[in-house]
Image (cartoon, rainbow, N blue to C red; front, side):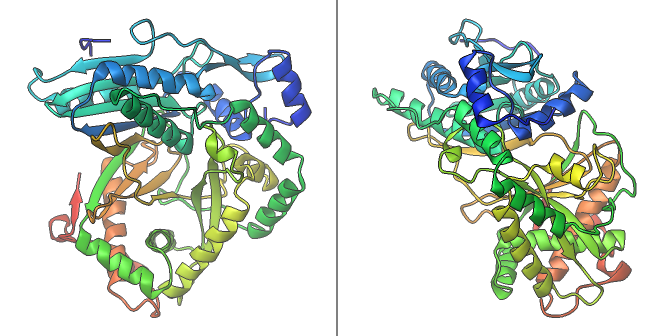
Length: 475
């Protein structure tokens, strides 16, 4: 849609990293990047590794100042000023010059106030753009758009390849752009960049792989998953990753959210841990298995320095739980609390290394089943007094099923997205799983957590959709 425009696993050592940098041969990939690189190589034309977000800004905004703020932010972010190319030494991140706004910078700005339904037009453009893959060898690996959809409402669209930024790095960039915009709008300078260098992140990743911590983490995960059978899927089969995904969204009212929070208090846990336990219970009952392994996204950043560098180091690690026929929700939640705590202590161990340890390379026999990504509320950045809300459009590839849970904040309840691989689930199957999960979640919230969990078909009883949970609003 044309719119008017106004403006191989790294085995390198830290010494090797410094040597390559000194030779101006570019930076090696982090371990997480290397896995994504291999995945993209299996289907170079796939857009599955795109991640995208829409920031809805409420208030006045100067698009010229915004463009300048975004350009300065990119100038501070090493990870966005690279292209990635295969070399005789393996894939390397090579420096890339970024043009100024209006001269090749990947930012499209348009007013849609004369388009009849500005939100629908913007949404259609975003969906179309999200389906385009990046050229890794040419770069850059990001694209932005700013649409005015109301007199005082704007949509900032961000698309980035997962090789460039993980979700944590993405958040760092978004906050910094808002910070610079606010300073420039006030006629001030934003101050020195808070970001560390990408080379430091790569060197830290390389040092970890030869450290005692790596060996300790490997021992931990191999002990946790000893004897673990192949995790069954809700679809009953596996498939190759798809280029797209299906999404079904439900909004949970504040009343239902309060019941979940009350349950969390009763079992001495947090509401995210309750949601993870509920998903484990659903998976156990739906697949009729007591040995459940969920996937948990981990940011993989342990040092203060790593927390200041936009880049990609996050990955997924397994959470193994036992959901026996006489299990109680309190017992299950306690397993989640302890398991998440241990996973965070050992969160840097690469998922692909774990696959190899278990003799399950690729996607066959994955050590983790559905992914559960719970994101406690984080206020959107402020743009010179204009507040904002973040809307996720794509979190990256979906191998099987991913459940995203967002705290909307301001006592607004929870949002739950079920993302599914369309090679495994159709719209009806995805809707059925989400409906049954919500029904089970409601039963758990209204039941004594120290009583045995629901079992058998009664645990997954279907309720006509129109009569189910008046506190749920489905998109």
